[in-house]
Length: 285
Length: 285
DNA sequence: GGTGGCGATAACCTGGAGGCATGACTGATC
DNA sequence: GATCAGTCATGCCTCCAGGTTATCGCCACC
Image 1: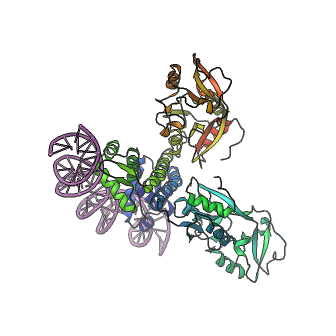
Image 2: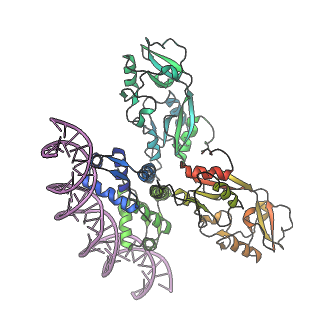
Image 3: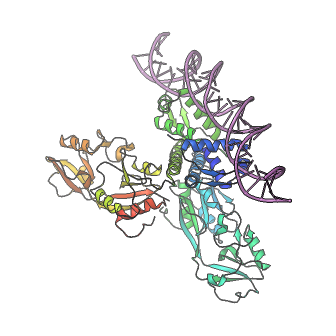
C-alpha cells in the first residue's frame, strides 16, 4: 500500500497553503531542507510531482491540488478519530458548542435553557472560533455542535438544521445616498467599497476593499465612511447610532443553522439537537 | 497537536480486527513486540487505554471502539487522498466502476452504451469487489462509481441515485411447504434456516445458519434443502430448476443504487452518473 | 506441577528524518 | 552584464524511532 504518514501530509498541506518552503518550514518548526526532503520523498513515493518549483516560485500541480483538497479532509478525519477516542467512555464529558461571538441571533440562551431541561443534559462548553473555521471545529472533533451561517460557512460533511432565516441588510452611514431607501438591490451597491474579511480566502466573496477582522471593526469603518457592508440583520442588531440598515432584497437569505458532524450518532449530540430545535423527537440526518 | 501517524492507525485497526497481537503482527508483517510497543506508544500519546489485555484475551475499551470506528474513516480518507492525487491531471485516466458479480440487474450494458455516447466518455474499468466492501472501494478512491444495494450496503459518506427498485423473493426448494404460495411474510419464515454471508460481520442481518460465500453457493444449499434464502429478485433471475421464488411482501424493497463519493465533483463522475440515469442534466448531490 | 500460548520486557541494531552549512539557480538592480 | 538577494536543493552528520531476536512472566488447561 502506498502509504502517506499524517506528518508528511501535514507538511504538504502547510506548504500548499504557504507556497514557500521557508515560511512553511518555520510554521512547522523544522528547518527548510528537512521540508524540501520530506516533500520530495512524498512525491517519489506517490510517483507524482506535487509542486512546480523554480528558485523564485512554488505552485501546485493538478495532483497537488487534488491532494490538498482531499488531504485536508483526511487530516480532519484523523484529528476527529483521535478526539473521539480521547473523549469516548467518559460519561461526564461536556458538550462543546462552537459559535462566532455574537453569532447566535439571540437564540443561544433559549437553546441552552431548553437543553438544560433534557434528562441527559451535560454541561456545555462554549467555544468561540476564529473567523472562518467554525466548520472545521466540527469536522475534526474539536466541537460537537456549532452555530453556523449558510451560505457563508461550508457545510460539506456536516448535517444541519435551520434555526432561523433572515434577510440581509446593507449597513450604510446615515448620510449615504441610499440611506433613506426602504430597500436596495445588490446592483445599487455597484461601485461601493465592500470589506475583505480577514482570514477568509477570497475575502468572503464580495469585497475587495480594506481588510476587516470582525463586525465591530467593520461598523467602525462604515461609520467613518470608508466602506459599506452587507450582513445578516441579527449580526448588527441593535444598530449603533449614525448607521442605517437597508434590506437587500435580491440576495439569498442568510440562515443560522445548527450543524454537527455527519454520521454523528452519540446521544450526547442528538439530545442537544432535539432541544435546540424545540422538538420532541430526534432529528433525522 | 496530538498526532497519530497513519502507520500507527493501521496497526491499531488491524489489532482491533484481530484482537490478537501475534496474528495482527503477522498480518502487518512485523514482529509481535514491535506491535506491542506501537500500541502502547499510541495509548500513552492519546492518554487513553485502547485495549484491555490479559495474557489470554484482548478486547477493546470504549475509547478503542471509538477509534476503530472513526479511524477506519480516517484511513479511507488518507487512501482516497493519495489515489486522487495519483490520478489527478491524467486526462486519459479511465473510469472505474465497481459492482458485485451479477449485481447489475441487467442494467449494466445499457448504462455502458449510454455512457459511451457521452462526448467526454472514457474507457470504463469494471472492478468486481469482494462480498462486503464495495462501498469501501468508493470511500478510499479505488473506484469512482459503484452499483450497490440498499439497504444492504452502507451508503454512509456516499451520494447515490436509485436505478431500480424491486421486491425480494424467498427462494425455496419446489417441495417446500410454502413453495405454492403466491406471497409470504417474513413471519411465515420463522424457524427456517437462513444463511450467514461470508465476510459480512453479522452475516448480513438475517441468518444464523451455515455460511455461504455467494449466490451460487446459496442456491445450491437451497436446492439440497439445507436452507432457504431471501434475495432481491434480479439477483436470482432466471431461477434454476427445482427452485421457486415467492415474493416477500412485508420486507422493505431492495434498491439497486448508483453510488459515488460524496463531494465528488469531477466531470468524469458527473458525466457517468448522468448517462446512467438516462437524464439530460447533471444530478444533484 | 508441567506445558503451551500469549503478551510484555530487555538489549541491540539500523534506516531515515532532521539539523547545519553550503551550493546552485534566478530575477532584480544599477 | 556583474552583483546581489532570495529561495530551493544537496551533502554530510547525528540521533532516535521503530524494527529485530531472545527471554520472561502470567495464566489456562491438562
